[in-house]
Amino acid sequence: MRIITLTVAAVAALSLAACGKPADKAAEAQADAVEAQGELKADALQNKADAADAQAGAMTGPAEANAEAQADSMRAQADATEKAADAKAEAIEEKK
Image 1 (cartoon, rainbow, N blue to C red):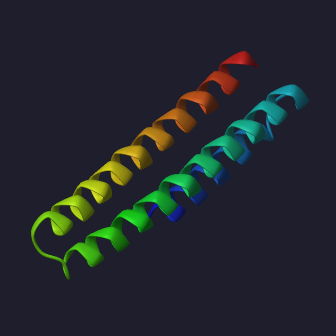
Image 2: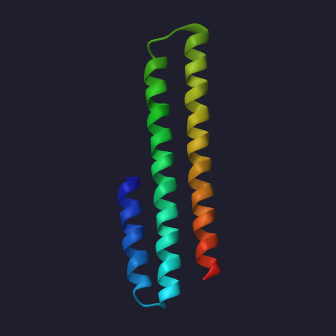
């Protein structure tokens, strides 16, 4: 779902960039790249969190709680990564 959203956003940004100045186009492209990279990092962390949750299912007691805590931490890190990438992309677009 994220890839579809990212693709739609990239297409929309590129279509808008086609109407602007070359400097605006470059800023849009850079912002899109930053967002895409952040999305990929966030997805990788989400996948690791899912794997940790799957492993936690086979554990019991403190080991299970530790694995679940690690998964939660990875998800929080993924959210923070995505938000930071979005903020950086917005800053790039505002500079144009």
